Image (tube, rainbow, N blue to C red):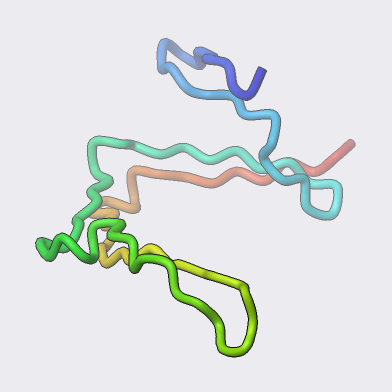
Length: 88
């Protein structure tokens, strides 16, 4: 299972087993999604547009790339938190 829903003081949240443990410390993030906005470019090419396959010189290799232009805005960072718990 990748994630499960937990409740803390009647607030729902997601518990993810893949959050990193850094130097033996556990980290918990509190995000208020009412204040997180994702703005995406109006140009279709930059809305995850694909460049198409391109051949490399003197080889049979091909590569392509996706284009994205956007901005992730957190308008009220004071309403979010990060707690670090030390491993006891």
